[in-house]
Structure formats: C-alpha cells, structure tokens
Amino acid sequence: MMAFAYTLIVLLVLTSVLLTGLVLLHRGKGGGLSSMFGGGVSSSLAGSSVAEKNLDRYTVLVGIIWFACIVGLGLWLKVAMATGTS
Image 1 (tube, helix red, strand yellow):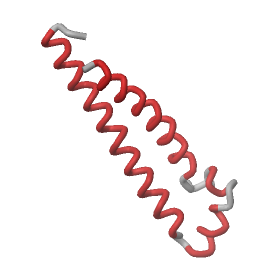
Image 2: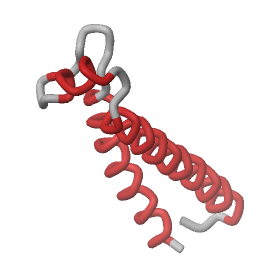
Image 3: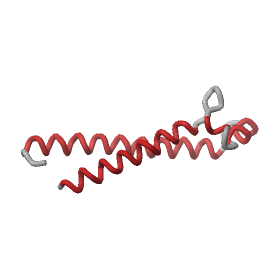
Image 4: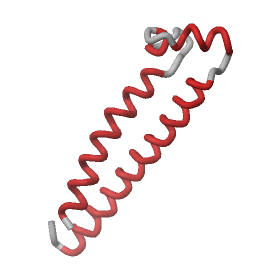
C-alpha cells in the first residue's frame, strides 16, 4: 500500500514541474515565453494556431492528472490515518 503513495508523490512532483512549464509557455498579453521559442510568430499570423490549441489541451490534461494526484493522496492519507497504518 505504501508503493501507491510513493507512486502518487512521484507523479505529483513530475506533473507539478510539467504544469509549471506548460503554463509558462502560454502566450499572455506580453507574449510570454512561447514567443521566445518561435510561438509568437505563428500565433500573430494565424490568430489561434494549432500549436496554441494543443498547448491548451496538454495543459488541461496535465492539470487534471495533477488534481487527481492531490485527491488520491488526500484520500490515501485519510484511510491510512483511520486504520492506523502508514
């Protein structure tokens, strides 16, 4: 049962780092980091490009996985505290 918690913790750390990077890649009002990597050129020419839409999808997917890890760890902790196991 402890392996489940460690797996969730590792997944939570990985998704936290990935989510931070994906959010920073989004184009904001000032251009964001996506313009540094060439995303600003394509999005200014085409409006909302396919790359920006895919970036949005990936960000939402990683956010959902991150949220599920938080909920899973909370439920595991609740059950572990109730049964007195660690």
